[in-house]
Image (cartoon, rainbow, N blue to C red; front, side, top):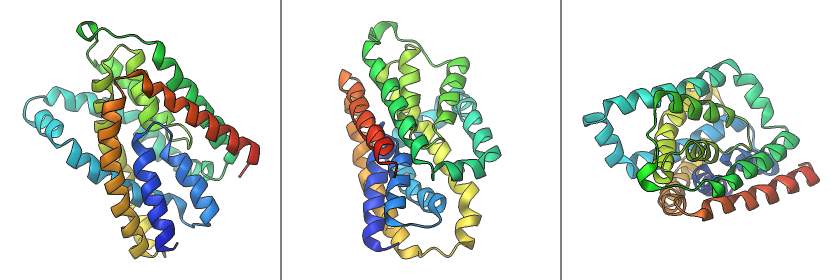
Length: 250
């Protein structure tokens, strides 16, 4: 993988990880076009750049949780369990799914449908619900589905939270906090494989840097968008890309 390819992948990872358009689908398609090997390892490293951006952007929320909202930790743990179980038990099948353009195309179309219907969920700020343990579990199950490339992790977790009646901004923040655990867990699972692989580390580090920069701005941008009906418009992009992938079957 060249430095140029790594920069492109890093930028795409940063934008698509938090915009609800599926980073896994975009990286899988680009890695296929670029002929990148060890796709899961490359994806994991690029996600680490997004993790660093999350830690910087959400530092106030993280500090508040640690010092004042320890109950919130249990919500995050409960919501993480489903994805953890799926990630560990189906690791080999997940790797194969990145090679299936039909699955990616269909998943993108499904993501679009999930996003589109959030526009019909009207909210009264004074009547929005709190995240309970049961709600956290439901959001966690949704996150587990996002292991399939083409299902946007941020998109499906935010959408499910909105459907449950949770404030849109709080839904986005909860999704981002969940991402910290999910990405960190994926990196821990892959660290040995990355060390044993023949990957060229310099291009990967460049990609990680660009992933960090674009992730930072993508997080801040989505937090502004999510409270509006414009959030559902990401569905149009998902449908367009999904049908292109299905038509071209690449």
